[in-house]
Amino acid sequence: MKTLRTRPRIAWALGGGGVRGFAHLGVLKVLQEEGIPVDALAGTSMGAVMAALFAAETDLKYLAALATRISWEDFIDLRFPRYGLVEGKRLLPLIQLLTKRKKLEELAIPVRIIATDLFTGEEVVFSQGPLDLAVRASISIPGVFTPVPHGARLLVDGGLVAGVPVMAAAAMGMDLVFAVYVPGDLVPDPPRSVFDILYRSSEIMMHHLDGVQLQQADFILTPEVGDVGTLQFSRVEECIAKGEAAARKALPTLHRIIAEFPSEREKAVGDRS
Image (cartoon, rainbow, N blue to C red):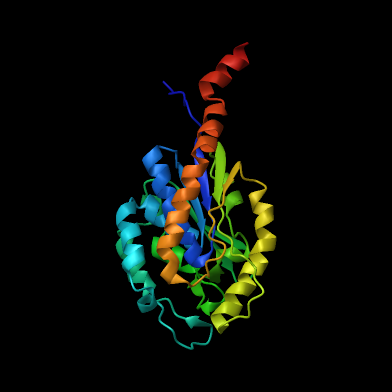
């Protein structure tokens, strides 16, 4: 006998944004504590990292403590290779450790991780296979991280096609899609490094693309982290706190949307009347 659902199934789309993406950690912590459903996740770039960690059932309090104490510069293996400034090899063991070396299909809830095929410009949606490969591809900002070879493809940051992967989340068959958007402010200050130029270029492009995706979301949560630089790892703790604050502020709206969504039982009654 089929069990009728009494609440909507919710997919969360977590956007990219470098260090600003640590706000997702604060958001997810509140959702978990308050019992707001997270039935599926889609993530781009840092959003992909957080989606993977959450679905791998990594303890969020431990992650928050680790994120504020780790020396992130140790994981930025700065080189001058042919295709990027950072090879990213030091990040892979950390991702593998925190996700318990799970594959995407082994996670507690469905997850989609977004990358871009540099050859064709196509969106690449990972739904199975090695989690560390998918995450490493999704964070590969062109010119900063070296691209990731994958079969006949050469993969870079998913933000080029879906800074906030709402459409990928919608394709997962859930009832509602909620988005967490962490864009950077566009400011007139002069860039301080080649990293600054590359990141700002990506952010300008994503500002224009994100609107298309966000129009498809049933709710958008936007933590106030726009003034945080993409590589300002000294502000990780601040981003986590602002993500938590934004989620707590949104709780009444989230509860209302969930309560107002018709359940299968209510639909069945309506169909018979």
